[in-house]
Amino acid sequence: MRFFRTRFGKNAISVLITVLILYVFLCYSLANTYLHPSVASSGLPPKGLRDESMIINGEKVRIWSNDFARAKNVLVLVHGYGGNQNHWKLLSRELAIDGFGVVVPAMPGHEEANTETGFGVKEGRRVAGLVDLVRSKSKIKNQKIVVLGVSMGGAASWLAVDRGAKVDGVITEGAYARFDEAMQQWFEAKLPGASFLLKPVVWIASFKSGIDPSKVNPIEGAEKWRGKPALIIQAGNDDLILRSHADRLAGAAGCSEWIVEGAEHASCDVVEHELYLKKVEEFARNLDKQPH
Image (cartoon, rainbow, N blue to C red; front, top):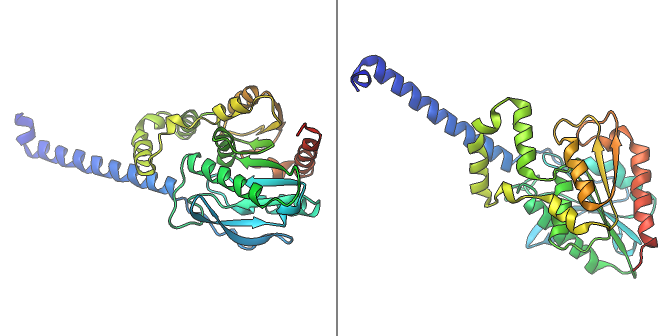
């Protein structure tokens, strides 16, 4: 105890308190940044799509869309964390040109001042609500809806399915099977031991959002979907969401898996654009052959 009364001891205590305060501030800042990513505006939609607002679950949501109500097949394109609608700018335009209905929503916390991201959970609710809205506006019989999501948008697609979203097909790229596992892998890839050192970041973000990351398990949606039309896409060089997540999702859903060699996370559409477009369109058209 005498040590703490010395000048050296008092200085050591001051330093420790300062470090602790800085550590807490850092964790809080990182948690807040995660919930409110800085995202540039998507700007104008591609030619053939309009920019409008729709009310989904009581929230005004920015949507790019064409006359999807009269299309036989509709693609709901869901961007990932830290992205925006521009991720789908080229693909959405080409799908519209080829006669598909296209709906591209903004996700919570992205370009929206009053919302936060939600580990995929809030995003899944939005996707499920949007699918219900698309269904309600349909003007043709037996319209088919495919949800195509990338990264967290892919996880949100499976979470929407878990909530009972009335879709006819699911395509996901770079989606995680379980959020807590993906988060730990990401932290450790950045710095060994970071998943332990930065644990308060997760606690704070969880407290602020009201969502427990350990309960965010898109694979449960894939399991419920098993045997129905689905496709898992995975970048061959993805070091953010590992191949094991794609393998487990494909196994749970009982569907095929397409590995895009040379692609990094969320870049499969860029690396193999023509084949990507072809696979998505063939997938959607083949739904017409499914029993009603």
